[in-house]
Length: 268
Length: 268
Image (cartoon, rainbow over all chains, first blue to last red; front, top):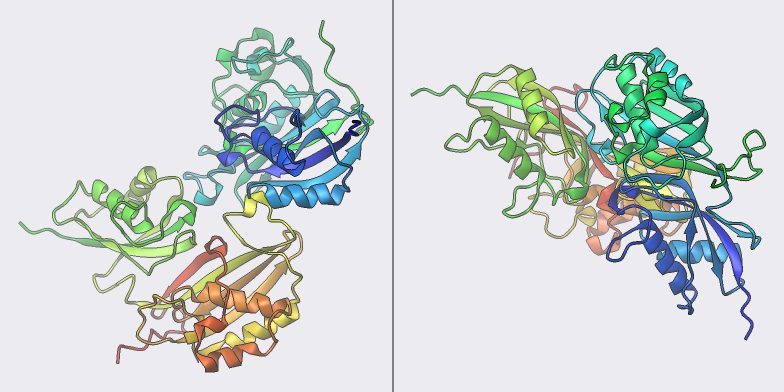
């Protein structure tokens, strides 16, 4: 029997609050676990089961505005059928926003050329109840000029060893940040910080935001980031900002952004 | 021993998602229950315990942008001390926004002259995961002209017997709606409906929104509301829209709004 497998690329949103992170784990409610289960139900439980490949992990409580995954499906369905079928089965904290048929050469994880993350930080003495799962919280005044200065220091190719949590399995801590920008919304009393880079280490964004806001509030000297790059010591970057404020905003694939087509450097 | 009791009026926000409604009930996490417990901790557990009087109940899952309550406190503390003290003890899904000292004649429940409710309704085929606890969802197209027509029919003094859930203990179903307005936000693809009235029956807003959107989508005739007032039959207004979309937006007290100083009619 010949089975034709069709490769689908899906883009999807999730509210990370009630997921134990992305990666499938027995007995845990994870994004990959829920998605894999529904894809296999839709395909009537083929043997071997369909494997869903995500662009990368997100931690417990981290959200996604446009996560990407691919899988090989044993039926040639129109993309709208996959879209409607999955969305009618998925729980309310996940939603597929786009389905594409792609070539067998496309790989949601290995072809990533860059990612964009957003961090939302609510200011004020006490946190608004409606924001508790969707923003970090910072009660000290922030000087946006200092924030922008710090962000500028993060841009470029650097060794981010001071900005990676223990437990990282990356073979190199060198990454390139293409841009890092901040915006203050007075109506919401929120600072949003956006990072675009070729890849991010374990907890890297949340640690960078911690350093940036400490600089913004004068708790840390304004020129501390070049020093942190040099010392390569995670203990000098103390804070890991809460997962609730972090959003995977966009995943870029090779040649999607002509300015930044690079992939991660190959393994040595 | 003479104990001087100071009456405080507090205004507070809550995310209703994880509360089993407002009213204190043994073994349940309720807004009144949590608040009463913290107020008594702050006052060092006086005997008899302090009672917290809310402006009225909200159901399980219903939110408040400005709920009001009062209590008599055995210490004459500055309002900022009550504000900071309560907020540092309250769980993250509640936040006190304002504390005032008021006369012993003020009563958070009996002096209410009106309330404003907001209902947020997300449109689109599938609901956005980030909105699932904060909006109702409606997948059919809505004609805003029909919505506005229906809302106009609701304004005024009417017998809302067709719009009250069984279980209501009100002695009359006559209420006055001062205004009912709708707004469509194309960026969010959401309809917001705001009701201002002298009082609302059990589930009344959620039932009214159900009728209004059915009219807006052509499921129900455009002039159905006068008929519903006449028949006084709850079974003819089928839908009760989800609690998640409903927000208590403002509580008015006597003489706060010179245009609408009325209280509910007294018991016969």
